Amino acid sequence: MVLQALAFYLFAAVTVASGVMVITARNPVHSVLFLILAFFNSAGLFVLLGAEFLAMILVVVYVGAVAVLFLFVVMMLDINFVQLREGFQRYLPVGALIGLVLAAELVLIGGSYGLADAAQPLFAAPVGVPEGVSNVEALGQLVYTKYVYLFQAAGLVLLVAMIGAIVLTLRTRPGVVRQDPAKQSARTIEESVEIKKVPTGKGI
Image (cartoon, helix red, strand yellow):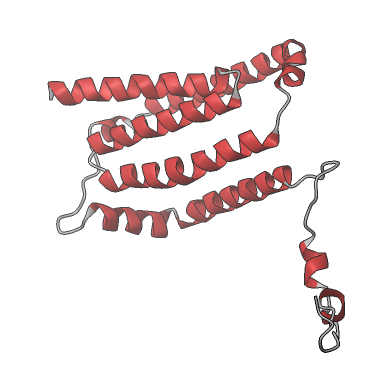
């Protein structure tokens, strides 16, 4: 138990520190790397909870796909960091005010839930997995029945993020050749193929 407690505090501390560095790092590439570190430590927390499947999905999907996609998009955007930092001090008071409002809302929601009479028994009553049901099966029954609409909404959010990343990276740049899929698909045989009749013995 002592070893599990030490591992929990280690993973939790690194996860929180990585999350803070994601939003405070000046270089977006460093932010993505700290995000990957946060994902790895969150996977360690899932392993301590006995949710090995969630830990594997977090590493394979989020670290292996989503975070790598973020990294490539950030590197392809060619962002001018000097220009971005010019308006930081001007918008800092507004951003700080919004952050304080969101923090106050989270404290009120969490405090009202924690102090509710109906929530007190739930803190000491963990939900157990029924006998004969694996971790993956129990998770699938919960996600695809009770939370199926939220699961579909999360998929739509990821779809919108993917489309936004594609739109940002495919913007028109002067001096760069860009493909037009609609124009390529509308080409006819006469426009794409030219037949040359070469007389016998007069070829190249």
